[in-house]
Amino acid sequence: MLTAEATIIEPSPAALRSDGTPRSYAVRTLGCQMNVHDSERMSGSLEAAGYVAAEKPEDADVYVINTCAVRENAANKLYGSLGNLAKTKRAREGMQIAVGGCLAQKDQGEIVDKAPWVDVVFGTHNMGSLPALLERARHNAEAQVEILEALETFPSMLPTKRESASSGWVSISVGCNNTCTFCIVPSLRGKEKDRRPGAILAEVQALVDDGAVEVTLLGQNVNTYGVEFGDRQAFGKLLRAMGEVEGLERVRFTSPHPAAFTDDVIAAMAETPNVMPSLHMPLQSGSDTILKAMRRSYRSKKFLGILEEVRRQIPNAAITTDIIVGFPGETEEDFQETLRVVEESRFASAFTFQYSIRPGTPAATMENQVPKEFVQERFERLTALQDRISFEENHAQIGRTVEVLVSAGEGRKDGATHRLSGRSEDNRLVHFAIPEGAEVPRPGDTVTAIVTSAAPFFIIADDTSQYSVRRTRAGDAWDRRQADSCGVPAPSGGSSGAVNLGLPTLRVGG
Ligand code: SF4
Image 1 (cartoon, rainbow, N blue to C red):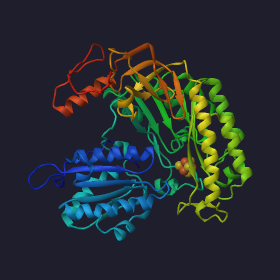
Image 2: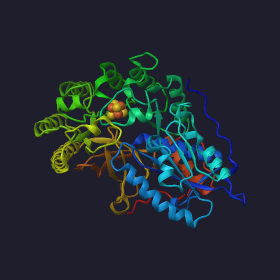
Image 3: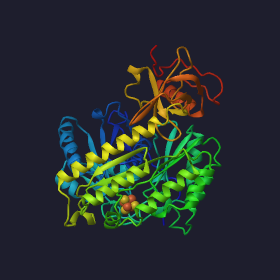
């Protein structure tokens, strides 16, 4: 039975140096969005125990690597990083190194065999034990390896340190009951465990109370949510419940699975105003033969049917996807099928992957592996096609008025181009101009702008004839965070009225 109570993490004596000052930590994340969110929990657990975030990761007293077993070369990356950290550790007395996440769950004690300078190895089911394991490793002066085979506490019950004031991730389920033959997740994260709707809503409400205006619901397979407590329509109901949360402006979710993507979910998306018109729907392959070999139970016709229905009910929906090229047995004909489905699907963007063997997955031992040069060549053809479609789809936005949720630091060239950046409602990256002398938004505020040009991976909104800024609670929250980090008191209260703290803010050159 999973506990539903918030986990209390006690202050740890190991979080203090001998002079009484707090030890610092850094968490490095490898892998997917799930891992990014898990890293927020690791940071939250460490801060609850008394550690503070290191100003520079390379100076941290405790260095945590949150690993991934899904992506290519994960093990090489991990052991490469650990090799570098060994040198740092030799030069810094008292430094500790911890390894968590999927690869830790998979390799377990092997990690300390290969890298004996690692102090703690913990798995995906016991992230909250990190402070206790660090303390034990320090006390016993020996490595601690603790991997649980099943979840004891739902990870969302752990303290979390959110990276963004305006947006938060909320886990609705962990694990997966599917058995896709390329995927290591089912063996590492276990069977699907669903959180109760009340617990999810309480967490969403807490995020909103804290200033968030956007929430992304997370699960390996979000739309099977409810399978554990026997309600097949639970995900659609959950989306509708999100519509009732006052102050929650943008709801997203990732990832759904086409097999169980039912009409009630599409209807809930269309009828709930704060559920955004964007959908990430993993295709993986357009060939029915390959989908079968992948053990993905939908076929390309069904996939295209879902997209058609989504666009019928939500005409402005931007749909993105994941595609694997070169799965074992993939022929040129199979690949042509993928190109056909991609052409028909008109994805706004796609994450494209070259298949490579993941030890421990059924596909790893399939005999008909595709030679690397074929995979590479097909990959290049696919990305060229998708880049063209992405460009055309973005180009079609020119002239549209978009509402942009301003982000902190998303546009790398903003300083040089005098623009700021954010996400439109359909989740496109938007770089927008600010008229001379006009109000500059804070991260978390929203801006209205008109799209003027496009590239495959972003759109530009330089027409400022309708420029306006809407100050939001998320912008206020950003002000408060800035004030906290500078030790300046921030005014509390709503989003009305100008708040000028004289604090450093985003620079927009004239
Ligand atoms: S649906 Fe398939 S790819 Fe996704 S987590 Fe489950 S097994 Fe892996």
